[in-house]
Image (cartoon, rainbow, N blue to C red; front, side, top):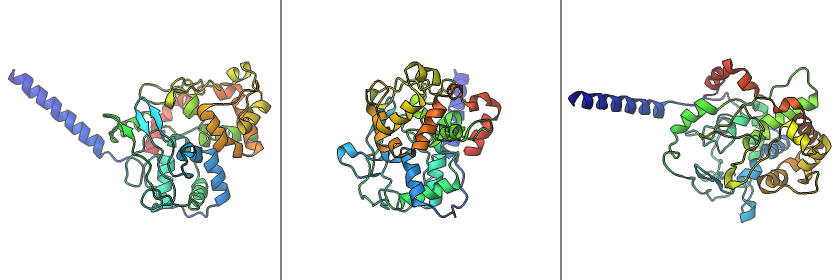
Length: 317
């Protein structure tokens, strides 16, 4: 009996030490100074493409732009997109450009705490310093709103931020947006938008029980979106089977209308209304070209290059 007590105490001590190590484990890295001059127009364009306005603005409730978004109800709890206006108390008015860069590309707040993955920061990890400078310049033009967004309503144990460090180690991969030399400029631009800024895979890729994307089924659809909605497969063969063409898909990204004359509903309607309709015709066409190419529906390149996945995670965290 005494041995069992000693063994149990030892196991408990090891567990406590491991927990303390995880809590103390720093994540993220200090970004290099953002010394580039930002272009407000380019930043506003990228913000639209990235869904910032759609997510962080609760227009249906009469909210101001970027003052906090509508709740995202998930099986882990309800998440409220925060205030991103220039208010120093409730928004990002007291941030630096470097704080902004770390938040956008690494998912780490100025206090060093990781953000919940309801914020799709993994898709923004490849943003260049110029992208960050442009976004930062655009966000500086947003009028302050001195009201905080509601606090996340997440129950234990999902409310423990230290647990997100383990989630990041398992599921935070850089987006594979680099251009391929044997593909057209339009195809590569579509790849950059679809896999990066527009973060199509955030909704259209199924997730596992921990909320990580199934990178073996990229764009295969997701039947369990926040709020109980669904996202269909946007793999090339399924798009073609359902009558989509480059012309009809690029038009739908502008108008919200499908080839059958129906209209997008739910979160996709919001994506079009607050995001893709503001993109240039060339960019909407590029997204359609990429998605309707058979290779766009293949397993994500990160899975195909599994040997360097740990290197990618180490470099990010």
